[in-house]
Length: 160
Image (cartoon, rainbow, N blue to C red; front, side, top):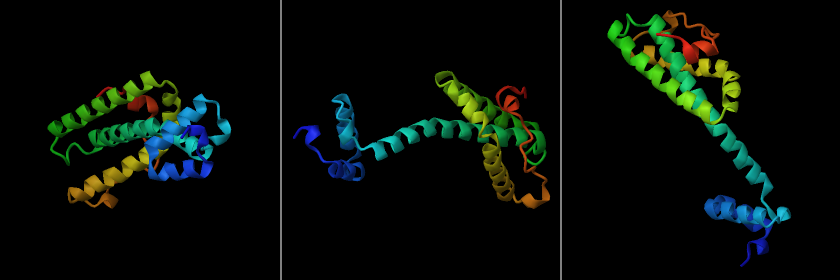
């Protein structure tokens, strides 16, 4: 069977039942310029998801950096003093390296990531509350700010 013989309904069914074959057939249809047969709805969704996956990774690295910057600045005494801060510094440096790797590979992510700062802080705040709870502290006794106390430049460049 030639790929151009497949119906749109069969192709849409393949999306759920055999994704690799679905992708191969859509690729072949595009190469053959059989645009009317392409499963555009699912293809566009996949392209959108691809563009978001690297942004999600950047946000995740930002969350780690924000959480550990905040711990370093505010909770060293709770975690054992200077030695506790060293693991946070390493974590910040490692996450910065990974973030910069993505920025170097995909420069447009830098701007997109900047727009996600408040979301990253929201996630970091949750992580901080969980960390406090797991260390037998009541998070409500600590004044973790609702608005991010760090700039994007702090995330990327602040010296520790």
